[in-house]
Length: 316
Image (cartoon, rainbow, N blue to C red; front, side):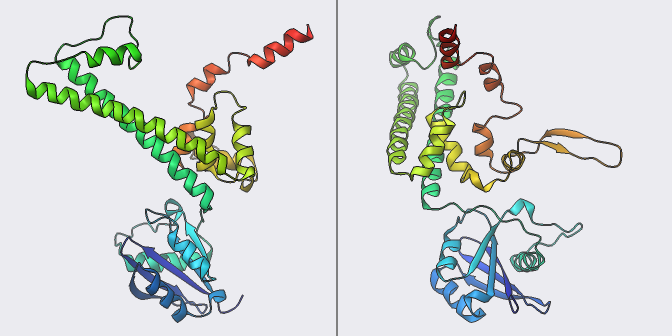
């Protein structure tokens, strides 16, 4: 389409730096506007007809609110992967204006890689799954603080008691100190451990409720993932939330490249050198999904599934 203007936005929590790449080749900054719906609407009306605008901005902590607002205005918008934006060697000056101009220039040249924007269902499920992950990490920190506190004072659980099971928790509640300050510390650490466990239970129940309201297509993918060895409900939901629509990947190679569990490569001429995994894409997905370094799944694959054993016995 002729007369298309490419807009680059450097988005922050309170401000947006704007630059435009004109069809004739000129790239110029348009200034900075507040990151609010009204100024953004006025900017779009000032730039021209929505069908003649192409807008992009980098993915970041502001999420996809701006994307949905521009889409409602009829403007084609793409969210760009920040790590894949071309970087000029020797460029040591970075400002909001220059970042917006670079986005507009690279967007017009086709050098930017857009990310997949989740719909409302995927984004809500992703927020819930990541909230549970945050609760699990908080639980680990709380347990470590309590365990190290007791270890500093020579308090060790009796042998034969598994850590953080029912008997271990009962033993923890029986501990006490003569000094009021240490007793207050113990009570606080115990409260943090119990509170973290309650958070995880509550969030996992919320995940069960959310599954019932998901579209049928998403539920089918989650059920299919649970048929794999080592993938339970929470893992399947996490993969679905982080991966999005599986059909958008044309091949398994593309899927593995997106998750970042393929090896790095630095080859030149007759020399071929491959290193560790690239760690590109979502770290949350890499943490859950199987990869070259997933030892647990490798151990699990040593054994036959129970249904395969029963089928073999029935045939005999």
